[in-house]
Length: 137
Image 1 (tube, one colour):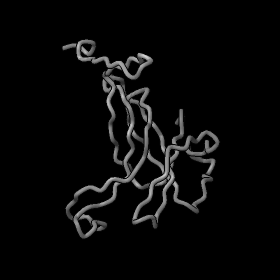
Image 2 (cartoon, rainbow, N blue to C red):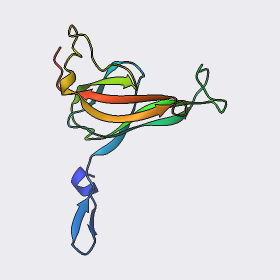
Image 3 (tube, rainbow, N blue to C red):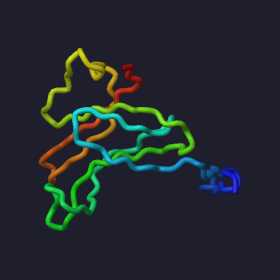
């Protein structure tokens, strides 16, 4: 079955708005808790949200009594067939400086796009995620 054959069309409301499925998907990415990092996403990926999700784990120093840990996650709408591209992110906690040394590739602070805020450890740690678009090495 081709992608076109797999599409479904639905008419919504009295205005006849037509909605159809596409080959795009919503994918989730676990995020590291470090000051800056790179993710590989399909080209054109559109970030939806960032939140914390509890996951079962074994042998983790930070596991809760129920055996879960809090993992920050990013959700994005992607076209799975698209070529991958590197996307650069900057993570800071509340109260931390957002200035960085001009000697590294993370110095383009004026280009940062806010992605979202998430909380860890029952709100005791609040982190803010930014994307650095089109960083050149």
